[in-house]
Length: 379
Image (cartoon, rainbow, N blue to C red; front, side, top):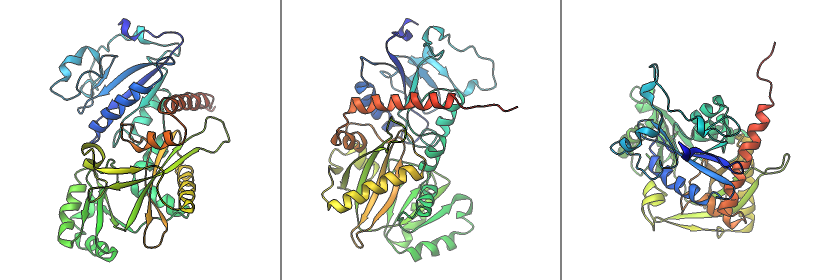
């Protein structure tokens, strides 16, 4: 167990990756970058992998092994938790030598996980219950940010432009199909059909004719019980990275604005992660300065309205028809792969990848220390 020993002058960062979501593979690519760029002079990395069946594996040798189900037998001695243990007596591996000065196996958790059960507040709630410091947004903003419907409603309430859309609930889809189709027809085709709680463009279909709607909605309902049908606009896709400041009372850091020009029909999963020529990333976006400033202001407002902490990537649409900017969605654990926009935007704004990671860890530990001072009982 000596592999877990902590040098006294380093912060132990548990990099959490994988997970039971459709974005499992994206998470692994992101985690590889985070592990590579965490400052080795300041941090000791402890990878924690979660396979698609929900088993957690802890140890410095975990990342080198595939999390595919047929390969995890190599990690059995590193199993930290398995769902099948729930309700049954089980002896957990003795990790006493892994404990840091805080009494935990690590000082801070860096979740590099995407999608449902990872980015939607469920994992964040678990870490809160365990009183572990963690990087990024808390339970509320993670949950709200993941639900594209709820985040849009809050944005609209704050006076932010949102494109027209219809919500389809799985529990009503069969019984009220004609009503839904009527509402969608009134939006006007083409439309984008997408799961309300998913990322990386998973489950999204661009629908151009009415007879394609059924299959598109059924496809999105494979990934979530709530689906958004959004009116397709002729837009320029803009993205802004936001980073919470370390100093209290200070505005968050707002990056330069980037533009994504997909070579596919839209910025699909394949375009993001599988096709090296799937999209052109332009930093800064080649649009008018007034538009760039407006986009930055909107990103800052959305970050604040949705109660975000740590970091977020705000995705916006510039409608070519009316030149207005519309809120598309927010990512509270944005991608950290080599081609991901969040670290690229921050790098173009003067914050290098290692500096960004150090800043996020410092924020996590500061946030945790503030929460520890709160009164949790009242008599």
